[in-house]
Image (tube, rainbow, N blue to C red; front, side, top):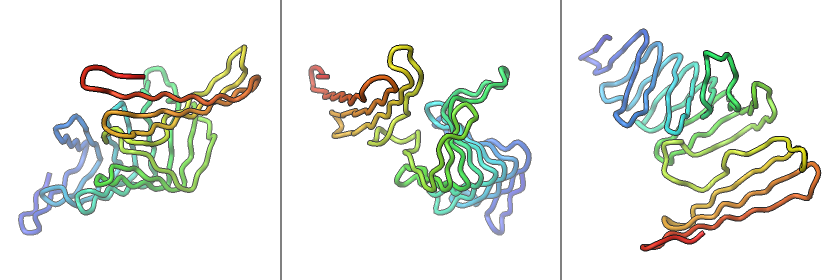
Length: 196
């Protein structure tokens, strides 16, 4: 670790770990930042996010204390089993990503969704809420599989946070052997109970 008093910058090399006290840990091979970590860069960057989120990038640049631009990004919230030499269930790969902590969103450019190591979907632009953000409206993790009765199926839920005390989850489920289904799940909390 080298601290430059004249420029008020810090440089660290080799197995760098940064913990922010909230349980989120960031790792890098090399990092250089100003003394309050408002601006800086890191090489071979990775971070453990809430809800088992794991993000890796070849490089990361932090500006304005809230914007983190990353190159060659991989994101998943599936458990990683190195001992079993098994790919995660799903991975989102991207040429470039931006984590904006002000609006708590992660945006991707040239994103590819891989399921069990196989690329299945390419989109030029994609965004989702930061796993550390509070509840927000948006697409949820899809469900897919094969059943002997309904054939292959795909379900895409959408979560709508109507207010702090109520929400609605709408889902479209497509099946190979039967007609599609639309599901709605409305919940509301009261002072003395809840309704679903």
